[in-house]
Length: 332
Image 1 (spheres, rainbow, N blue to C red):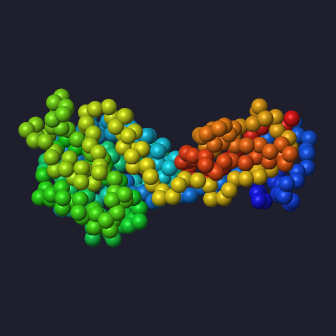
Image 2: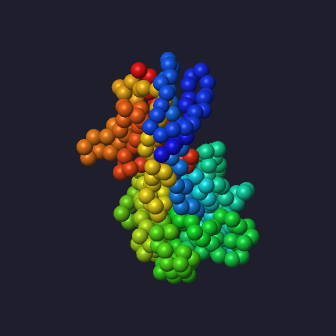
Image 3: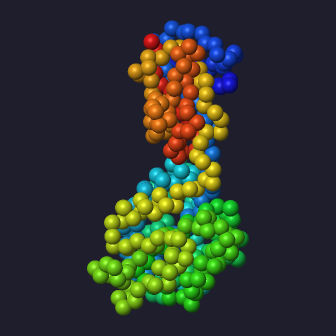
């Protein structure tokens, strides 16, 4: 296979293209060489992330706890879900506000240039919202007409995975049922449950030290809703960093239906000059690929052809789309 690579040297950048199979011309080079190979990895499935944040009077410390962990979401999405839509609505049931994405623009598109402060500003809603909180009403209103065609236009994508993250110390005080809301979302996604992710940070009886908006009530409807959609609930007053890390990882897990692997076989990568094998390093973003061992796929080197190949069974770690495989070594 003919493979085009870029040879990067400290003295400059040189472009070589392979003209013949199984041939190479030795070159006298005294700098460390890095060969960049574009494996053309898949982008993965689109992702829409909707935060439903309680903005009633008791929520100031909880909003701030979430705000301080926004770097975890950003780092995770930049690595595995570039292009994810990030939107926030409040639990306010005021008809003029319910379901409307907050901020200008109405949602963020996650990318390498997105700042963590942009995410923090979105989730820090303040505490001037109504005392009758709902997570179900704002969720369904945000994803329904007329808002999806007006103020929320562009956020929701039918083929994207929808991740719902709830932050509240209250019960859902709307007339919507857990089953009715779950059915709404399942209908929205044509029955594809893998396109829905639910995470809820709640104040429950499991932690009596965590103050609830109504100390006599358990958020049973929200817990049941999460159960119906294979979601997960978390202690609002627990380890916020650990909880947010788990939420972020659950959201991006399995984003792509296809195995995360190169779009072309990585065989016969020409090294141009003989490498010092002890100095040879192969990396893919933050994944270090080692030489093949029995039962452990990696890279192999053919000295006769001066070519490197990467085993097709290697388990690739997801990186930022566009990440290239780097082969670095000192010449003999």
